[in-house]
Length: 484
Image 1 (cartoon, helix red, strand yellow):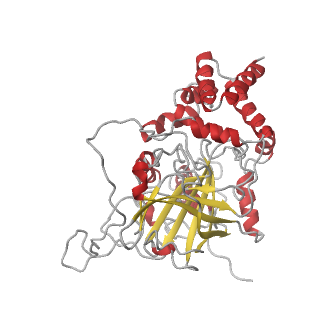
Image 2: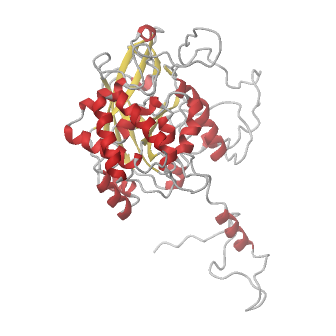
């Protein structure tokens, strides 16, 4: 039988007794000199780091992405060509509004974040299981999340707050129609699609620019829960989605997604019939059909949840050559907000943690010092640039292409062209079966009926009626039924 390892303190000293604290005599008080006790309690007090403001409840898994169709005509990103190339990935799934202990089987969007460990550095694609979002301007994001989070007085999510914000934000009509429909509660993380949601820029080797949208289509088939099914599951097993993902990978049923993209030549954007950078809208597939480019497979569970899931940090500003941002206002806001959140929550050196550090290439820069710097710290190398001592130098080649500007700075509203806040929500409603419409209306009506102020209810119903007259009429009847 192999000899057991010796328990030590954090400084490496052997621990003689891990069951009894040092005391002044058999019955005396505990001694402050008991370094092992003090160290153990002090560490325990500091074990938790701040949870994410949003997407706090999550799961993750390792895997790979394999190219199935060469994308080099659209982008010079090397991990997207040639056919057969594999790139290591780590994916984190999450709910949005709930805290770390909240149940997973709830009506809420799901985070779908993919970290590609490419040979040109890490590329983070931070999306959701929805192709759209509630708002399109980052200035409104803190207010939106505040309306969904626990109320300052009652410390619980309040229907008044949820629907009051919506009633003043008609651009959310499309997303609310999606969220309260049949796909609003995924049965698990494996059987849902993922989307980059935003519009991104691709640039090929010739310098040609394209705008793209990412669609990860689940190969397991879509599966969702009704409101009643979700309530039962959330009560019986709050960790339902986490348990399902781990069990599937453990038994060898590796979940996979086929990645397809919509590609718009950059020149098309200015003349498109609605603003293509509006996060509350989708691009019709008839205009820009889906093009398959690869397949993602998850085949390994984390060994340690804290190290690999809780400390995972995804930043949409982490691009690689050939991929960049678009003028999407929400994306532009996230380029700052996500990295800032990680610097606060995990520290300035979070990118050196094994789960966040590049795997296929070494990071080489002049970043120094900061809390919890645990590597060799570049030894005696110079910490400035330019220098004459063989330090890393710039390439002079931009990762992505320039974005055009069209006028003086200012606070501008949105130019909708032929689009508006209600057209696509109405189209989505009319695509539903009769039974799906009934469930959608009942889900919305049951929430609206809990609102205390009639003007909030009336404003909310007005937006749904603007999307489709039948939608509004049914909803009015449904709210009255739930209030009596």
